[in-house]
Length: 328
Image (cartoon, rainbow, N blue to C red):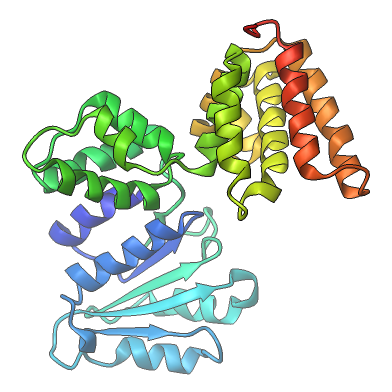
């Protein structure tokens, strides 16, 4: 089951005895857990129980699942942060319990990986996919959130919001609520996003490389100065630029689909799409030269031959000089 389907299921369909929340997006996991509290336990503190995995044994778990809710009705029992590799006995207990579960108990297991492998058939159980949403599902979530709040938003504004937040739903959720409140009864525009939404560091790196590729020297150095003047992020700027150019080069030379490239790089399709957009402003030969220079500068930073500020300055000047699109 996809995260995007969970709310409708909990509101209108028969519940499973066990839900396994698993994925790389903590916001989705926390949002899913909240849905169980809201739509199953009805926000009643006495109808929910959170179990720590520390010292949790099979007997304690079964006691929690088989006990009745104080006010009757369904009860939610949550196990947080279960490490599957260290919990074989507990998982075995859950599997056995699900053969004849308490109809009034809903077990929610938050784990680092699925508690049952794909080949195992388990009744009364569903795996909830809490991995980061792809662009299609992200747009579906945004549309649903806007509808819930009787709000409207230009398609261009939606795309800009996704770009500025680097497609992180946790940030999108906060920024979208801010935009809805600001716009009131009117449609949210791209200018609203430009004015109100904070750009992620990842977007700033994308914006920097795009302007370097276009030869927009003045704007490139404005973005660079903004980042380097932030003492918290300045030391990480070189590494982020280096990683982004590696991603750009790999995306440019690879013959795979965005999904395949993303899987190989360990990033989502959205990140590959943005990398390809940035790479289009450079030749493959130029990207190769930049990646090689980054590796050389990285070694010099680590061996104290150069300061990171000087390394970034040198790198930017090299890119502007090297790239054929540079505007004098």
